[in-house]
Length: 553
Image (tube, rainbow, N blue to C red; front, side, top):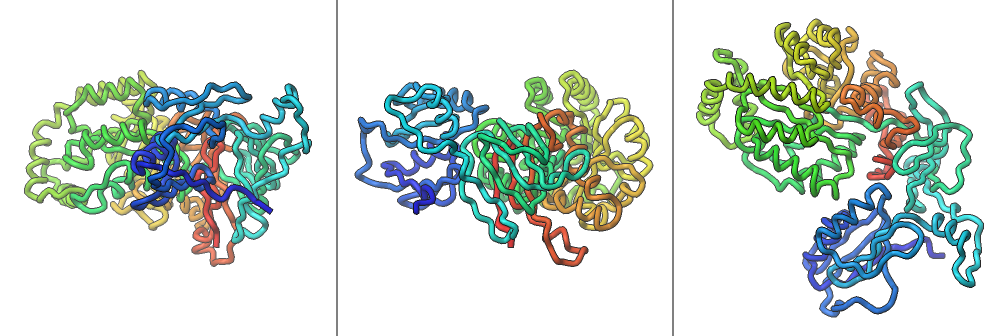
């Protein structure tokens, strides 16, 4: 018995041109490439490109073609993009459901389609084709088995091509607590129903018995991507490669919404304005075709960076900045400890000599006061355009008072319990790094997350410089007896959403919100000290689409 399509091979006459078409224009994921071919995936479909001197030179006259599914909400985006790029169309749509009929570089006939067999049958039952006969009352007989009691044996029978999905038999962490053996309905990328009674018709069914569903993690501050770009001082990789690889690391850590924390500094290289511009252009441009995690931009602006002020203002006005934090990492004159730490930090991401770094510090210090007026302009713009404003490393009462005057929404890494409490008093959400908890304390010797939790002066956790810590932290808080797991998970989901002003879109498993969630396997027999390591992420969904799947040992 045939169980499905194993793969499709397309002959191509110019491998590089076809590879770029399928990956950069259509958004297929590259798996492997060699001198005469390439392996790609489109959803669960294995697609092979094979260099062939006999490849057709014109479109075939017949109707044979390959149809790819695209999300309904992205149809117009694809349509506009294909027109701008001058991709040839071979047919106008006359069937049920939106479609774009295009030719690839080798004249293979393709279709980008919204809908599936269920929607086509429903339409044709209302207006049958001539002589049409139906052999089945339903096309919902296939279902994906994400887990069949034993998470070690994950079997995928089919993948939905529509936008209506039902996750069945799952234990769901809702805002009000756990709901056991539930059915979660998803339509067009949003949760529509979470209950224990649904028997959905017309939905693609996913069997998730034995699994738990958690809201996707929202990371407000993460800069580990810098190590993907620059793994060694002075050694840089192309942004598309680095950020695409970083995207996979985010998903593997359960992060479904990532505020890419881009430092806008006076330093050359990795933390320069040129680097910031390139990152923003890629993430908000071509990156949308290849990145599965929902990426947003968090600009970490250094107070002493006075160059390019108008460009930064333009970014804010045009909606390209989603969080603005005000940073001051320039060592104060005479503070040798801070200077030594800063010199060491810069040397890890730059090939500059110590003498060159010290000269840079001296030059910037002489002009740092010129940035004062610019900072207040940026603060005003943030409030005018609804951009959450964050402080960074407030370590004195004077700095906290200044943050209050600026109406800061997020207080990143306050140095002490008292300063964190003062920040919360004026309404800021206190954000701390998950690595602090997982490692057992601050690497700078400041307030620990455990201390902040004990004193009730923390609202959110972020990855800071280590993505996996953000997934492990809630389990660690439960293990230490500092919080229930339900409370701890809110530190990485609903409460970051509230702090960033996106709680009406994300952060909870609830009707009307975007369907970003994790399916995890909670079973383990390890000692509690390392139990979190045995909790495995089985699947990651962003906007109702499965974007990553992992086999659990």
